[in-house]
Length: 317
Length: 127
Image (cartoon, rainbow over all chains, first blue to last red):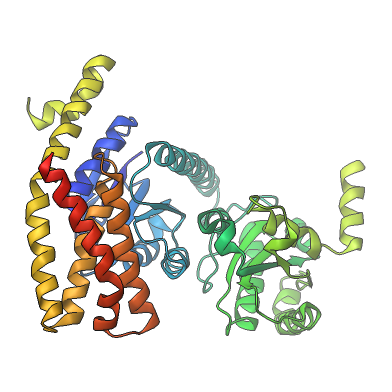
């Protein structure tokens, strides 16, 4: 993996490089500032596979750098791991909203770095596999081909606060149970996602997901929630625990907003998306220490009995 | 050994690699210890600024930046208490900034922790 580390402290940079060396990561480049990092990125013949960014740096902060990297087409999904001694929720929130994939706190813990880089390597392998398949498919087609796996979480670029599902899971894990208690999750399930998927080409399906994500973000814009697409027509949103949401009202608002797109879908011979919104799930409702299950539980609650039934039919038939 | 040779450590047997890393870590630890006196003096200069109420906000920020650098490496070099106290200093200043209190108020909250940090840093010089 080609790794770019960014930290203004030379001693920490050397220590990090040494630790990565020890973990058998040989291809490591170190930058001393956000500005230098962007120069390295611009000059890189072969793109970097992973970034390790310090948050607190003079000049461009790690969060600003993360945002700048994410704006580059080649780095939309590349793992970005933030490293900092600051674990305040506002820093964690800012990092994930800027597009960070994961988060580590100083001092360095070799086992933790190994685990996080292992995750980054797996994510990279998946990205490379998808890129290869897309390139092969594109070679046989006139237009560039987009690949979307119905079951898999999908990154939806260009929607405010919509982050990767893996990043949302990592965000919860980073917060831990104590700070997670301030959050609630709910899911938005696109009831006819499977039907649209079967009728649309991948690009149209991705556009549909983008429409739904934009409407969710717009309906909740005063909250600035974190949203992610988990696959199988399921979006999850993290909001403040204190937020008063009538999820039935929200469901109506989202569906009404989506009706505005109906004519565009009809022109393409596709049904417009219809959603159900699940109940709010708060941390106390799920088992202590199993942070990620707040998302699973939210998704389970958003799937209507009818959808669940049809899922079972599909499964057993 | 040149830096280039160290970069190609994969060509060496594991025992040699491990010994090289150990040497590099020891060198880094030496560099850290060599900066302790300088950092104590830098902290003290900023404390004087704060006590004179001269450019307090900038002085407090500088203390936070210095503490940040120590937090990142001290524990790895075998000084976990120094690392933890430096993190507390950084955290306390960040907390003050977030709550909107003045630099002088924030300094009053931070000062006892920084004193402990300086005591610990001075103690490792005595060893």
